[in-house]
Amino acid sequence: MAETTKIEQVTQKATKLKMTPSEAIVETLVKEGVTHINGILGSAFMDLLDLLPSAGIRFIPVRHEQSAAHMADAYTRVSGVAGVVIGQNGPGITNMVTSVAAAYQAHTPMVVISPSAGTPTVGWDGFQECDQVSVFKAITKATVQVPHVSRVADCLRTAFRIAYAERGPVLFDIPRDYFYGELEDYILEPHQYRVDARGCGSLESLEKAAELLASAKYPVIISGRGTVDADGWESVIGIAEHLTAPAATSYMHNDAFPADHPLAVGPIGYMGSKAAMRTLAKADVILAIGTRLSVFGTLPSYEIDYWPKQAKIIQIDINPRNIARTHPVEVGIIGDAREASQEILKRIKTLDPNRKPDQNRLAEVSNENKVWEKELVDLAMVDGSPMNPRRALLELSKLLPENAIVSTDIGNVSSTANAYLHFTQPRKHIAALTFGNTGFAYPSALGAKLANPDCPVFAIVGDGAWGMSLHEVSTAVDQNIPVIACVFNNGAWCAEKKNQVDYYNNRFVGADIDNPDFAELARVMGANGVRVDNPEALKEAVLEALQSTKPTVIDIQVDGTQLAPPFRKDALKMPIRLLSKYSHLDHRNW
Image (cartoon, rainbow, N blue to C red; front, side):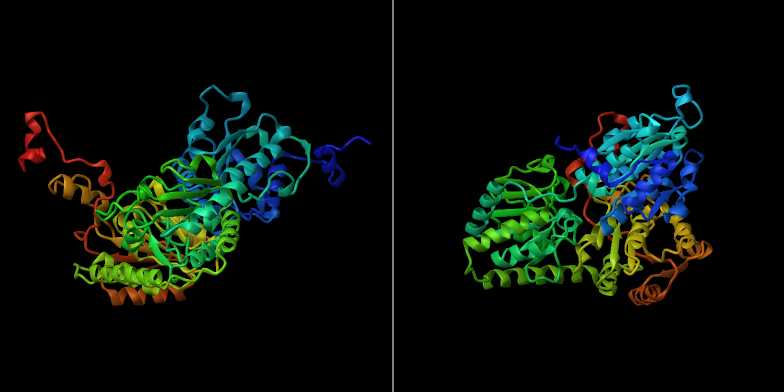
């Protein structure tokens, strides 16, 4: 008897169904566990939109499509299920460019359903026509174009397969006339067209890694996003405990190792933990788990050039492109963070089964943490007018419930929060990461709350970034998503203002912001709004917000002169002017 093909095996279990393309898309989404889609309605996909309520899929209309993909990004990070967004062809889809690019650099699986101009009119520069595939090619893992109505379900399955396999957004581009018509296809279960199991990597490489760690004099772990995505906390903790290896977290992934563990030293990178940096500087072997070791995330910080140039690096990443991309490695392992770390743990226990905890190392880590914590508190307790932003961050960190999810934006205060945020549970820190766009935190908080409604969700946002996202308070109110926005109001784009202080002799161009009363504005939009300017009022506002079932905006008045170090010191130089007209601006003439 001839061997049956994969397709023939599938047909033995399922029957082709006659359906419309819209039905095929929606049924595939149902199989993928999609519970909601973010976007703004448009005529291009209205036939699909009409099916969503009957399919049990919630449509969440945002106020700007950029917010839709930020919501999906955070939803995926918290839930592990790829978020889905949709918009009108042309401007509705191009409005998502920034947030899809952010998700791409954050390695977040996502599917962008991208209706495009109808096939009869392509190339005529018709209303809302745009070559969306070309626009998104550089910021997605793939652009999947539907070539024929009969391929709609197949192409959507391909989009999900690539999104999960390569950890990033995928554009599913479908001409708007292809939502209509008739086709016959299977509605398959996800396991029939994509594989979730990733594997532990090369056994030979795992053996080398274990031998290197077992013989290391001062091993240090850097745990990253991959550890969180793979639910790999326990095995990483096991390695740290067996080796008595201090564990840092990668830049803006403070939830990649429990902060209350005796071996935790906090995050590396800009405005991270000096305890982590001083500890990492001593390493002879680094075990980097689930992190690409980005250039920006490993730059010197606080004038500390902490990266140990002679240390041997073991890097584990699911994406082979990330191995040794920024730092040369001794051992590279292409594998799932949890499965690889489990195998390494087994091997180091076999190599050294009677190893005892190094009490001196534990004491050293404890002391480093105490010194750093004291410095953070001392910095926060410096008086400010009206309030030191660090004091507000310190008080907020004390008030956060253990299960709180925190999203952070980009900017002076949001970056400083990196030093003050501590997490004892995974999937709790949602940061803007290296794409660095403002307006990220609040829509991300909405997506995080949708993913885990039982957890309180906070967004830490500067007033500049808030101006780019406050319109979504209306979405939070309309959709009953009770997140807490902590808006640090210092009246300026302070990250950039710091550059003008240090490099341009306090010449401020475009830095200052004349803000409205954000609390009053929130109340007008139907949310709770509170304005605070001291620690006690902040504490009271946060406690009340935690008890409320409505979205809350806390307008925190902070000192705009108490600034963090320059954000991009590596990319700035003192100004030199060659034309006499501008000679007074030359730093040599100050």
